[in-house]
Amino acid sequence: MSIKVLVVDDSGFFRRRVGEMINADPLLEVIGYANDGKEAIELNKQLKPDVITMDIEMPVMDGIEATHRIMAEHPTQIIMFSSLTTEGATSTLEALEAGAVDFLPKRFQDIAKDIDEARMLLCQRVRALGGKPAARKPAVTTARPAADKSAARAAVAPRPAPPAEKTLAIPTPPADAPRGGKIKLVAIGTSTGGPVALQNVLTKLPGDFPLPILLIQHMPATFTPTFAERLNQQCAISVKEAADGDLLKPGLALLAPGGMQMQLTGTRDNPVVKIVQGEASQTYKPSVDITFTSIAGVFPGETLAVIMTGMGADGREGARVLKGYGSKIWAQNEESCVVYGMPAAIVDAGLADKVLHLDEIGKCIVSKI
Image (cartoon, rainbow, N blue to C red):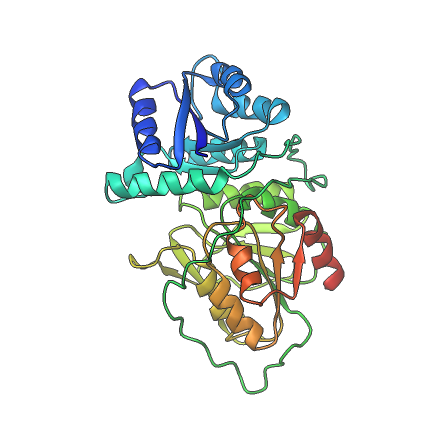
């Protein structure tokens, strides 16, 4: 049975374009079109789609308000279309907090070299989200620190994890580096569904959290500064977008900048963040694998690495390296993932020391430390 899609946009041209791309996939079917958010709410009730593609800026009712209403009344998986600007980043993050689970740039040329690649990426995202209905989404506050949130979502059936992008250069840790010693660093990697999942985890950490944290979220370059600032406002710990030369500090979470690669260099006594330009051949910029593997050269057996919701298998090979040196690897469970891809790759490879519901991860990090 095909995955049913509702396309929402005030531009007739864009509606037709998206509809044609989705209908070209034999597993997908557009069952309706809406001109604005108000119409989307009504058609969602009538047609009961599996997935909605939603524009943000529309007359009558915008996509953010429509998402709030849909997730409160008839929850459905929602993919937002947005511009890759600072304003677009803010609006997209508001939409994700309202209950949308993924986003794509409205200019397809920003993510694809041609229309065929754009069609593949769009349909891949829709298929990944179309397995089960979404969970009802509670309102999100922006107080500092934020209240405990529950954002569990239904997940699609796991699929075979794709192969690693390429063989990673495995660092040689110092001869005196502890193997399986006391945790000195927390590193978290995530993708689709990650912004809300990271918020859930990080808002549970106290302001005096004793360890540094590295965050790797698949996200465009124009989004990561806004996302880091948003997390900083919501959390008791400090959060900032990582910059080249940053030092690790207790209670400071550094978010990998979009379009770049974040690596850890230096020594156990003086670890330093290195930000390098992402290469054209790299699928993920930032890449969880690249960051995790670099960590193994500094804190090989003293890292708690957590892989949360996301498509694909990024993080699996980096986690394999860390695990081989004695670090601990945790994975988010299928029930609470938006897309059970990256965590499934960890579990299927036998790398997970713990498999946890999203709502347990933050509390377990605190208790572990």
